[in-house]
Each structure stands twice: as structure tokens, then as C-alpha cells.
Length: 53
Image 1: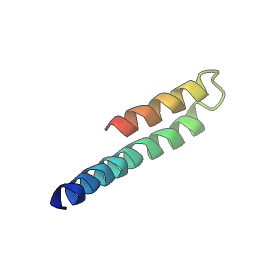
Image 2 (image 1 turned 120 degrees about the vertical axis):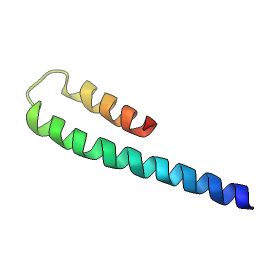
Image 3 (image 1 turned 90 degrees about the vertical axis):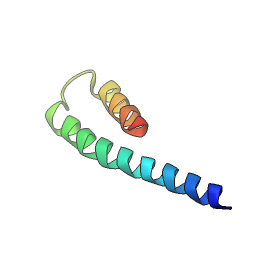
Image 4 (image 1 turned 45 degrees about the vertical axis):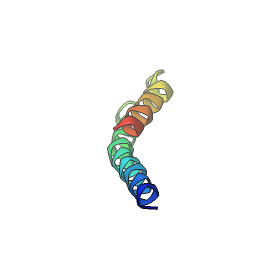
């Protein structure tokens, strides 16, 4: 039982840190680089790297 609680906490903390990393970066990218052709690709890269953080 303790292992499952620990696993949930680790997954939740990883998701929260990824969200707090990716969300401001995505907002900044959307406002600063909105005219660029690579905007969609950059958002995908930012969210993927945020999920790994």
C-alpha cells in the first residue's frame, strides 16, 4: 500500500513541476513568437520537455 501512495506522489509532483515549467514557456512562446512558422512545433517541444522535467 505504501508503494502505491509513493508512486502517486512522485507522478503528481512530476506532473506539477512539468506544468509549472511548460505553462509560462508556452505563454511566452505564443506571445513573442506567434508569427513564426515553427510556433506549433516549438509549443510541442516545450510541453514535451516540461513533461520530462
